[in-house]
Amino acid sequence: LKNVLAKLGVDIKKEDEDQQGEHLHAEGEECQHEEQGEEEEEEEEEEDVDDDEDDDDMSEDVQEVLSHLNELRVHVTTVSTLHFQVAGDIMSIPSPKRPWSDRKFLPSSQASSQVSTPSHQLRHVVELLTPASLKGGQGVISLVPGLESGFLIQSAPGPVYPSSSVVEIPQQGSAGGVNTSLRTVASLMVLGTYLTQMEGPFWREVRGAGLSYSFGVATNLESGLVTFFLYRCANISKAYETCTRIVSDFATEKVAFDENSVEEARSGTIYEIVSREATLSDAAGESLINYFEGWGQGGWRKLLKYVQEVTVTDMKKSLNDIVQVLFDNTRNNMSVATNEAKAADVRTELAQLGKNNLQIISS
Image (tube, rainbow, N blue to C red; front, side, top):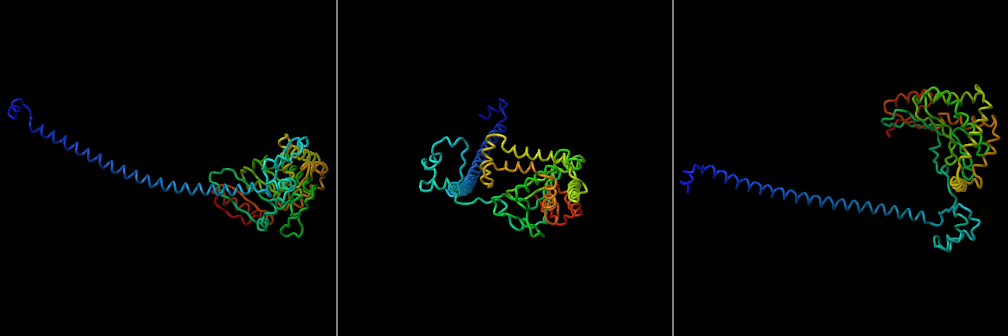
């Protein structure tokens, strides 16, 4: 056969080599497939182990979430801590309290008394503040990467709700406290509006000069704090220095209150109070808040009478007793937010204005 093939010109040696090559190639591919199969099996085993670990972690997470939910359920379904508000023409409904007990939402033995009278008195934020938080003279600068503008807020003791057990908040270096009468609250609100209203003192010298986009003096009766803030400052220290000088000028009577601007401030404060109940839904919400705050029926509307009666003398008293404390760097607490590049300069500049103990912290 070889002689015949040789006569036909077929290269026997080359054919043998090709066949051997194909055989070796086939064996190589078979070995490669076997190796890949072993690797895939090992990977699947590892994935199974990882899945088991993930399942264990997920199981622990689920149990933790369930534990928190059960704890929450206990708190929100404890009868002694529940408060209900029903808004509507309830007086036209016979026995409006009956559905709460008939449908077994509340224990029948306690439903009637619990719906009628809460078993505990709600506490306000001011009652939970620690003495250290009211100490005064504290301050931090928080570093916020990428922040181009600056932000500042500072606080000092102020009026509290009539229902709060903290009738007076002692101030550092003072034996007295803050008068919490509605007249004081009204005059403080009008004063804050006067300083910050459009074309008012802060508006002209701070926003008009491009030092800060916004600013404010606010009274928070829940926390018992009066606050001053600067929002989106181009120059924090310069804006703060300007506001401090304006307050000082009014306190020393270097600058007098303008009667027309005082009237505008009274109108602005009245609008702020009335807008709390702009809709029926707002009015319903305010009635619940009034109950919690101890204002009684009418709530904030009681302030309207006092706001209309606020005089320049009342505003001066609020300025000297409360707002000057707010700008006293030994008695207020301050927080500043800026970027890392400006932090050192801001601390140095505010130290020159009397705020010497600002600590720089990372956000």
